[in-house]
Amino acid sequence: MTTASLVLHQLRASYAFMERNLNLVKRYWTWELVWMVYSIAESLSVSFIGMGMEYLSGDSANIDGQYLVLYLVVGTLVWRYLSTVFYWITELISIERWEGTIEYTLMAPIHRLTHMAGQTFFAVIYSMFFTGVILGATALIFDLDLSNANLWGGTLMLLSGCLSFVGISIMASTLPLLFPERGAQMTHIVIALLLLVSGVYYPIEVLPNFLQKLAVFSPATYVLNGVRQALLDGTRTPALWPYMWPALLMGVVAIPSGLWVFKQAERYAKKKGKLHRNG
Image (cartoon, rainbow, N blue to C red):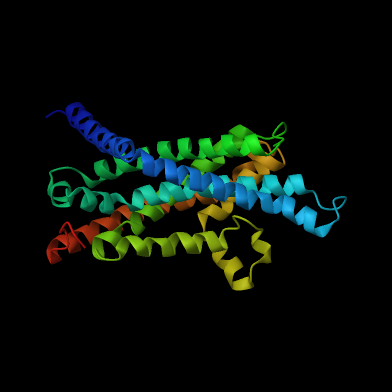
């Protein structure tokens, strides 16, 4: 088989995993609808806190409720995108167990990178669509002023942080593999810790000192700061580089590390017979 044929074969295999996930979404579209409505309601609830602070303070002259709403909207949408990517990738093993194909998939003569690439590309595309729908619903409720926003810079910042979350998600996806009974639930710990220290709904400066130090190691911290700079302050794209390069660097480190960790976990799971379908 020539190199070109081999590459084409791997691309087709990656697309097959993307198509499988799309078929899952179609099959369980009612659950997707429920999750979409829940996510929209949750995002709107958090965003209304901005207007609530202005109302409760009784000082509309000094508290800009509209700015607070936009601050929370940006944080909510960025986090929704990154967390959706995280969950789709961490369900790499859970989906196989759920479908009863874990033995066939992990024992098949296919590169794990090919498998993960299909899962990752689908996660990125699905998350972008999912977040876009929430943004549309939010824009209908709130009068968002994005006339001075740098949308292109915000998008680049978001994609830069996505690389880091891919690596972290690959590492976290080993938990359902190593712990069939409760591994999927254990991934919530990872995302919860990132939520706590990354400043999704508040500046990290309000955190205790030890949590502020942990925030430096979260790629979401840089993504949120960069996207807010781009959308709220209209910062030009070159000026976002101080936020972009740490997120990119973390991605460069996290993705190979995640692949290595998953390889070791997969080898251990096969050796110990953890590829059974039920937990």
